[in-house]
Image (cartoon, rainbow, N blue to C red; front, side):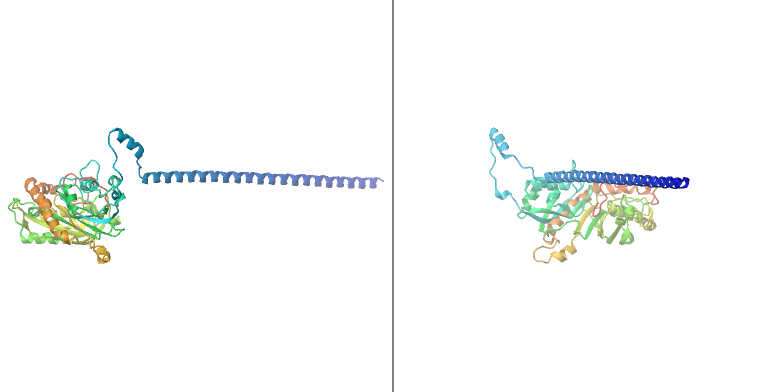
Amino acid sequence: MLLNHIISSYRKADCLKTLLRSSVNRLCLSSRKKSFAAAMSEALDKLEQDNLARKNAKEVENQSVKETNQVKRNLKRKKWVDWKAQDAEEAANGTKRAPFDPADRIKRKKSAILLSYCGAKYFGMQRNPGMQTIEEELFKAMLKHKWITEDSFEQVQIACFQRAARTDKGVSAARQVCSVKLPEELDLQAFNQDLPPEIRLFGVERVTKGFNAKDQCNARTYTYTLPTVAFAAFDEQHEQNTYRIPAPILERVSDTLKLYEGTKNFHNFTSKKNFLDPSAKRFIMSFTCSEPFQSPQGIEFVTLKVKGQSFMLHQIRKMVGLAIAIVRGNTTTTSLERALTEERLDLPMAPGLGLVLDTVHYERYNDRYGKDGIHAPLTWEAQEQQVQEFIEKHIYSNIYKTEAEERNLLDWLSTLHFHSYDTRRDEASTEGGGNQKKQNDDDDGEE
């Protein structure tokens, strides 16, 4: 009996244990299921919040883009006149608006213009607010003759204006070329009457729609006219009016200039460029010296002529300055050879008076479009006689007269011994050539 009672109690305890275990398992499973559902709910809520945040951010971004586009449209949109209000105002003043003339709506096409100017009293070619520049005089005349609109006068990019080369303060141009959209009917004679006498527009040619005076120009030629006394030995005394350059010295000038020819690194002949800058490499096609000739004042001059694909700021004036120093004996050709290496040397810069942009070349454009029967080649042969007369009267005569009266070059020659022609200790060392206007060191004729 006792044994049966013990066995029965054990069985009841075991059943109770099994039931308790089963209940605990059901409770744990229910708890786990409840935790998973809560986690899923939280994840879904978070996902919904993220989607809503992204949607709001996208809407803000779209609104910002719309506002930006609206601003751009407003900038491009013409400022329409409230004619009703203006007519009422003019009627009160006793005036009346002229009726609209359809002829005022002028169709303009891309053109190339041939420009000559003496830059002696101008602060360069490029427009500069508050300064007297060549472009400012040109644009004022264009606006007066309705070659460009008032919007184009305020922002010349609207008329697709582009110069082939930008000249610095005091530098002249014999055959500058610019591209701009102009009307088909033009009166050059009347236009030139509204330009200063030292600026003249000699020709206009229709060009292709995509023509750009700077980008399509494949070479530029500059001249530098100076008295031959500049090449006399530095330890000799000579009068500018009586000096005549000997043949051996003239030959040495030509030999020195030839050292610049070819593709070389001209980082020492400009500013803010180092040897590793790829744009410091330039190709000089030729650099020659003319035979001596006498000016009307009796001073002997020569003209140096350099042709290259493009030039950097002050490059030509520094090339001329170093060549003069070599021929005079202030330094040797070793300085020129070192200047074309990675060393940073102190080099002189010749004055800007004798520098002239002589010609801009468009051989590739002429070969492709000059013979298509629609566009004329940009050689300006028909205008050459007028250009030559202008050059002699306004450009070279100014160089001869200024050198005779002010002796700019002789004053500059006295500063050559201040240059070390060696490694520069200070990037801010003094450059010769008078006051200089800071400009962006871009490519193509930044002289």
